[in-house]
Amino acid sequence: MNKDIVCIGAGYIGGPTMAVIAKMNPSRNVWVVDINAARIDAWNSENLPIYEPGLDEVVREVRGRNLFFSTDIEGCIRKCDVIFVGVNTPTKMFGRGAGRASDLQFWEATARNIAKWAESDKIVIEKSTLPVRTAAAMSAILNTHSSLKFTVLSNPEFLAEGTAIRDLLAPDRVLIGGPSDDAGAAAVRELVDIYAGEGDRWVPRERILTTNVWSAELTKLAANAMLAQRVSSVNALSQLCEATGANISEVARVMGADSRIGSKFLKAGPGFGGSCFKKDVLNLVYLCESFGLRDAAAYWNQVIAMNDSQQRRIVERLFHALFNTIANKKIAIFGFAFKADTGDTRETPSGAVVRMLHEEHARLAITDPKALNNAARDLADLDGIELVEDPYAAATEADAVIVMTDWKQYPGLDWKRIYDSMRKPALVFDTRNCLDAADLRKTGFNVLSIGR
Ligand code: NAD
Ligand code: UGA
Image 1 (cartoon, protein in one colour):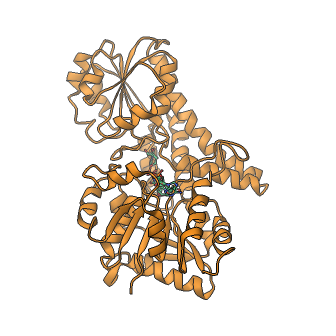
Image 2 (cartoon, helix red, strand yellow):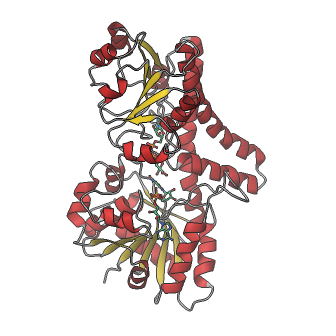
């Protein structure tokens, strides 16, 4: 009989991942549990707690059929033999490793609950991104005081927000790290079967890659660090383009045509945001430092430093373009989400820029199609920020519009209407290079973009 599944943690990872696992494994029951009752209520409602294209449809198909959201963590640990751990692992903000190491308290609380409530052998799967060798600690907590057998696997998730459902349905690869003993091999086979899907209709088996546990844990940090590093590299080049008259879009296009380099993740912009790149690179820095690898730590740390520089530079360039004073000027911020097609605002470049402009006493109006609730929460400590659904209202009487998120509706706005409603001279700073700069100039705008 197929083993039932529970995921502990009903966040951006737990919800979408388990919805797709349930869809592709209709004869398994899949539970998603969380200590946050409001989040579980939202998963059980028509208003899901996260915005992700295609998610509503999948949840509608499987919820109540073989996917269930619940706060009964204890009951689900008892009845399920396969337990995913998808809790948050933010950067630790106190004590040893503050500002770099992962805060492992949520993960450890989960391991202790599993040890306390389990009544049969379990496969425990790290879905959260964790420092390399966490599985050893997990196994020690689980296996010390019990006659039960807990087999710990690492199965990091590579989906990106905004394309989560597409990434889950057709992943480049699935990674499973497991121990090489008999129990480990059996647990890996069980998880491979889940990802292959019933009737082998999901991930082609040759794309399900297996490694030892430590390699799997490290690969996740490494993959995010490499992606973040590409963004920082192209942003560093964009600064040089601005100084020399080269054009970063042209440079990136031609670099990307080299199949050894590849064309993805070469888009210059306001720097990377999102909950993971910064946290995972910092975690890698901390790991390198812990093993005495100072040069490696400094190398990865520079990826973060470059990202911060890119955001400071946006404000500096705006400052100069607005005659070196921003106080009391109205600035409209188009986009608060860290990228298009998500409402997520964790580590959003827009937030960093808004805070710098607020320090300069700008009057700020923020518009975003999906992220205004999160913006209200994130910016609750700042006074005088206007949050407006309608971009035209946000821009009215503004001195500058800054496009911070690459929402696909922004290029299609009536920019002549926006120009007419603004104070002159009117400036657009397109930090995503998604607008037609020549057209905007014809309309009368002063235009700034990145790397041009
Ligand atoms: P999240 O904050 O959205 O969700 C985590 C959930 O875990 C929260 O709802 C929280 O209430 C719950 N939780 C915490 N402690 C708990 C406990 N003891 N028992 C039950 N529930 C508990 O975080 P997320 O974005 O889903 O990320 C989770 C993990 O997945 C992180 O390690 C992250 O690095 C990794 N990851 C995230 C993404 C992404 O796109 N967001 C992609 C790949 C990997
Ligand atoms: C990223 C990875 O792409 C996923 O593989 C990984 O699973 C996930 O982190 C995670 O571990 O959380 P995500 O942060 O959701 O996914 O989104 P990305 O598409 O990677 O974008 C990250 C940031 O980089 C965004 O702010 C985006 O605008 C920026 N970016 C991306 C650029 O500035 N230029 C690019 O060329 C690509």
